[in-house]
Length: 302
Image 1 (cartoon, rainbow, N blue to C red):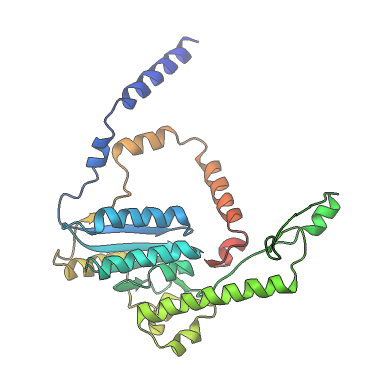
Image 2 (cartoon, rainbow, N blue to C red):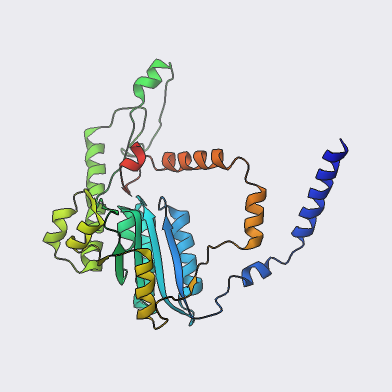
């Protein structure tokens, strides 16, 4: 009993002391001190939280004089339409407004929204075996009417407007609703293809050839003109360093890198991380139901 009380007492004292720390000092530790390359990440599902964090870093750091260029590491199967467009616009702003090079390094997967997001970059590196492409749009709906009938649950939707409950999971989709969603997906797909044509300066007919949702290798992506060069993350670091005059081993500034203080608390509260990570990913996938996505389909089904 004494040991338990001592542990609780020490923990309360520790938390009380750390709560008095000046949190602004943590922010100061993330200031750029030397001429550097800003390192940004596009990792996992591209949703609004990721795009907002990306745009925040662009606003805060990209215009700074000490930032000579931006390197983006991408490992993403895709995500929502608007979030992918926002990241692409932020990259365009760096290149067009701040006149700084933006290099991209592709990891295991650069697909769907992952591709759309980087179309405004100055130069794109991919590994030969990077899963690349999947230029298409998907929207998944469910018909749970038989399940509801089996469970003896009656669902009532009151609406004003024919399409207000279009995509309702508890009834069969009508022909006019299917037509509505298919037209929407075609419109968004056209936006995707136009971003590829504009960003990569490709012929529209050439883009039509591979913009059918197929996935291909990074090496094929270079052949199609979607990427510039087969190369590793280190190749991208070396080339952007030489491009910006910082040499082949430039300093990288990662605004998402955790301070020692943050890492301590992350370890301090590590219990239950496996479960929280699982449920977080499940909730992400559930939230995407019915939304038009630039999403590699196998990410959902596997």
